[in-house]
Image (cartoon, rainbow, N blue to C red; front, side):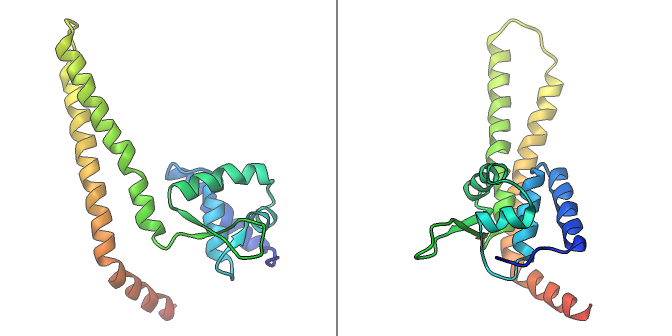
Amino acid sequence: MPEPFTTQWREFIEECALLSEKFSFSRMHGRIVACLVLAPQPHLSSGELCALLSVTKGALSKELRIMVDEKILKKVLIPGQRSDYYTLSEHLWANRLSVLLPPLQASVDMIVRAKQMVDESARPVNLEHLVEMYAYFKWRNEMQCRMIEDWQDRRPQIIAETRAYFKSL
């Protein structure tokens, strides 16, 4: 079992939870990521995560499933162990960017359907809101794709610069 976190580290984990919420993820999502970032070992079991975060297995299990589905976490199987172990995905941050692509595209598709409904009905509608909405989500989708590509292209350089910065601290 990993060593429990000090009060200072617990406060950091809660700060990550609140920040995660501001990015439209759950607080538990932020706690899990922070816990795995701070863990000295490469992976933790769900029981270890529960103990370190002082939560029940029920409070944790749904979020773990979501994070595995979204490729934020990777489930690790350890021969001879009955517990499920989790680690941060190798491409966690690119995956985080990718999570938004389906809802962004769904938004574009929904607006196209709305425009078709307007065209098929006799109901008068101010199209300016629909035009603005479509333009925004189309642009946002394109920007999200560019961000993913840019991160993948520049990641090695940014990582090297960050390592150098951390050494200078």
